[in-house]
Length: 508
Image (tube, rainbow, N blue to C red; front, side, top):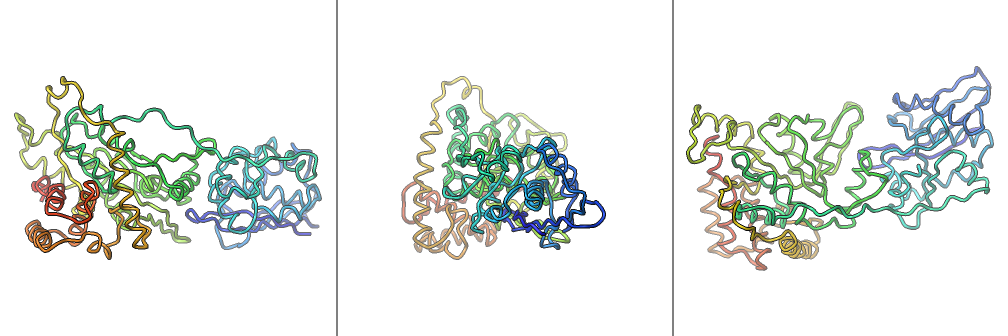
């Protein structure tokens, strides 16, 4: 007799069905798992054997063969424990095999028979729902599985015994409730920052249009403080964005107690991060920081201290909104539509251009330091601003800056305009920064004078085609903040001022 249990394997955030086939037949006593299992799957033999023994069951003294089909798909992770155990239990008659056909199953087993939390339950629930099946998952992960569909049949047992009793009718497992993280404490407020009015303006523009931002200034000028306050003015995640972000976090095992949050991700990796940590990869091609920041912010402090090759690996995700990890035996793509925010000192000593400071190495110090950032990466950054040192007068004077709540209201209004515009055009884009090049001329709406102005500016500044389009997108955001339907020369001039061409003349 062969029992079949459906489980799921992961390719990116997509869940692929896997058929767990269990046969117990005559032959030498053995427990064999086939179907390209990795080390974690192969070790499930001992976990399943111990969990069944702890639940009052024992493997028969026969040959047990488990096939994970399709056999040419690599199987990774410990979530195959529970479907293998249930397949064995169905084969020996401990649970009805016909009931298992209605569910997809995943979960890790402890030696005492408990069902332990695993990664990827939310995308597995979405995949099972697409197959028209329910889901059996660990109790600790039931809260995230419940988000897939309010009508979906979900069982979240704490142990094998609980699940067996449920199928035998002696115990009823209730459907888990969807869990949401409690709102975080008060976020850092823009009102805490003294001075830096132009930098605050740039931060508001970046938030309103989803634009990439680079801040250059001496140590202690407040660059990291400004970046840490960006989440306080960003709008909450939309339902579709929330699901995308949570599926990636679930695969990475970063959903605490299976609870989701509507806060946009804010990831700030250290400058020692490797390419696999930033873009994704490793033995199992896990998502990197750029994917964990999907629909949110990736903040790189001390930008030139990152490995130049690691920085240049960001160029494709910034352009396509996708991180592609290619391996010899498979290819994985993770969503990575991010807002890229970075900060850096003007030179290695940190004070190039500051009044009263003279570097011993002269302009060479700044040029070599800034040259660690490639031109193609800089071309993808819409706003490049200088953040000067804060004067003692600004620090002593009472704070009179706007609160994050006031700025967030303007950002939300500008984003609502963009959402309506792209919905009318039948596009999936939500911000000006993510608008495709094919509609830029349509949404920019330049008159003759404005067109001549931007043409002269593009020739003078030697703007690339990408740089030209990004200027128009940035000007469109400025017009949205002002509530204007069309662009004016004022919007174009302000957008050009944020390109910061002079900041990198030394590097050039």
